[in-house]
Image (cartoon, rainbow, N blue to C red):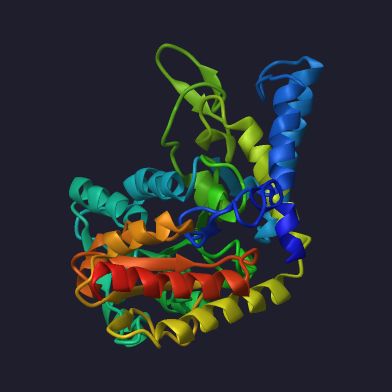
Length: 402
């Protein structure tokens, strides 16, 4: 595939020396434009943003804020001030919980999340509920691993103040009907946060079309550096929210008795940010937008369907999702064979997949208490890699005693 040339992971070494990397839901390989950007920034000198008045600092501040504009266009936000830089989706969710949640929730209120949430979209709400006396309720999923919309509708009432839900499940690969869910939630006045960590690298996201109140994603899952991420929030919500982290540069004036804060987004970005990472993230988003996303999505879907077809030919296998709308994620189990053992045997043959609880323990324990196996594809994966994975999996099952 020509697209692989855009990723030094593939172009730097021969195809034989590179592992077959099928753990893209955990993190993606880094695009050459991202690596080149980091290299250029670090070689040409460091400075801080929004502080010093010398030319090096001014240039980096301009590029840092240009990155915010790139990101706003990428998800079609109305205003670049609606983009807050974070270290990832996890920090973005924690920011909303500790800012909007602390400001707006009182005892007796309710928060809804789905049964398919990642720990990052569960634990912050658990902690907030403990502090504020709020109830956390769980939206069930159907036998086909889809959100139970009838159950959601029955849970929605005037007590529900926030619904936090994943766009695409990191375990099941289910693509949730986010727009429909948001419309239902808004009817009772609930705010909606969408965890888009598994979405933005694979499907176009338009936050205005979705009408979500908050949307979060991580850079490292879309070919950018680790410890970069985005919180999108509607500007009226951000302007009303208190800052969570405090310190340098998020303030207008400070005395020993009080402080006045900058407007959004700066009031949420205390301290020295990940300047090079954020600028490189904008390069990754620009790279994604330069591609034929429809064709690449179709390629990912082809790989996923091929893998599912071949997996179902294996005895004693169980696929954990039959959702009609699904992404390039497949979780499965083999009866009487430990998932970690199979993953280790595959690794010995240079095939990288994920195994265990997938940072979604409540869901995975219902699927298979001992953990599951997960393969997740990206557009740089190939048909040959899928076939080799299947053949090696069969050999590994035989070795493990299946």
